[in-house]
Image (cartoon, rainbow, N blue to C red; front, side):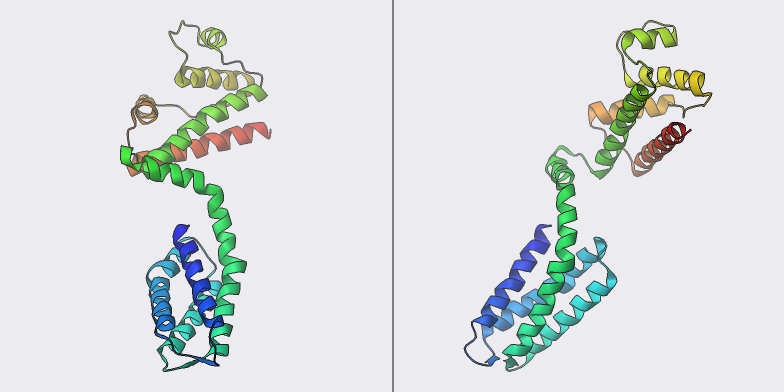
Length: 236
């Protein structure tokens, strides 16, 4: 996250400033201003963000104690350089060992975050991204599982399974044919794609419709149920 990375750079900047101190004490205006700004950022932005990211509460408590001490040193007329260096080292060590681990995990998810952020000018929101991911996962899951079970879902075989001619092969027909074959092979009923669900699917994937939160939740829950059903079948 850019906010945390910038904040970490600010910590290193203050640490560098302290290392350049020529005496055993430090009382420069630059040092105080930097620490006050850092402390304000910690309280208003970084600490709440780290909580949201799920950083361990014990780690957050350690960091908060260190920032409180650093803030107290900056408020003094003069502060001992050794005390400030120790405090900054504690903060630095905690960031390196804990916070940057969180950052690495976030970076792995960054393509999704960056795509969502950049596409926001199109009016596409988080509900659209979540629903789209779930809907595409449905299709991919059916395709891959059908291959495992040697169920052919090309146009010719889908028409044979459904016993009807189709103009174009859509996911709806594939899913209907897949469900019939699973019933025939395993005697298991697959979840039903309702007419409304099929219409909403097309609007989201092809028209850029932002589903309402309850619509998105229904899609995600259906997908979870579908995946669990497929998993149960594969384990039998």
